[in-house]
Image (cartoon, rainbow, N blue to C red):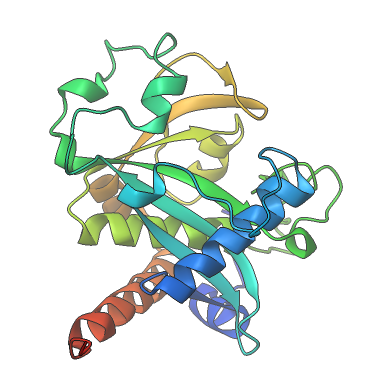
Length: 255
């Protein structure tokens, strides 16, 4: 972290953003629209679709997170947590397919873990106005060396970090202990500044750029967070929990 940080992360986040679990059909559709804008229209990773919704076969077993601008509600970014299929728990998660030859199973063999306790972070996407710094426009959720600023002028990468922390909070609620992800090479060093350990579990692969198969412990993230970052995690976690409680408190729809 920058020396003598001068940022109140909780208040700084509240003044800029809100994190929203996609717990309704309308919110899930908004996530798909963000993904279509970023993955299909801007980056060309997927084909443009007539309905302007980017979806795949893993969305049926995923929970989604939306980041919005405070006050306006304009979408900023999104991410999803892909769980194993309840109908076929041993069917592979996306990274297990992409990385099968490159995984170091002496470190971890995902197929041998309790399948209900693992999930994958994927489809991180940030809208173009928030990734316009030089060299970032070609990445869906870019990592920059200058994200933390300098000791004299510290800053904080609210967007990327709050999306990850929101996914961690959702993982904990759903009983997930181990998160897998394909990361940019710089992400582990980036997150180490926050007290988050990202462990490489295989050799890099080419997947929309160079990506490293990695894993994170949900309980390890929560217990290891830098005290400077913990208020931001609590803010995000409480927002996620409030949304889920409000959903559960709603009366059933009458048909």
